[in-house]
Length: 142
Length: 121
Image (spheres, rainbow over the protein chains, first blue to last red):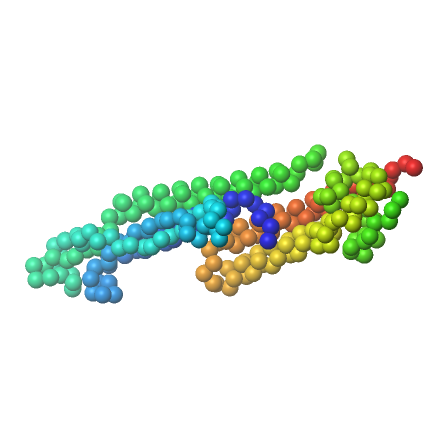
């Protein structure tokens, strides 16, 4: 298959990664008040870890090509849950304290903006490669 | 002039000179005029699968593949499978650009053919 637009594979992989990051952030925001998760504990904030897919990029003859970005893993933030006093809550302990998820909504919004900007940057790369290809095809016209 | 063996009968019936445009025998317009001995040598040396017509056929089938991939991705997206939106759009753009490339190649070929046909003898 011909590679008609250069660099588009990297940009596409980065778009995938940023999309996953946005999904994880939306999950964090949606569960900001989940005190009773599947395991009965409060929801733990999740973090996305990026890596470049270097291993897959090493060719059989040892030469390197540009490694695309990919998601290495989605980790849980192990910081302790936030304790608030709410005796009426069904999940309150003997002292009336409820363990709320360790999600800071301000942090999540800042991450959301950052992920969305990174996505836009990769879209700009795709757009630029596309317009370069179209300009190249128009060589000699007019 | 030494007759040039035709690889693809359909193509060569439209454009008898298409086999001159192989990389071995130089580009179309600048080195097009050659001594008959050189021409015969160039056409006998070239490997059978490497002619311009087979290259063109490869390009057309590549473009067709791109179009098929693009259609597949879009229909997967529309039928609710978990395909990211940007995959579909990028596949469509790749199909579009490769189709444009094919159209450009065809335009240049036709231009050069018509240029030759207009030549005063």
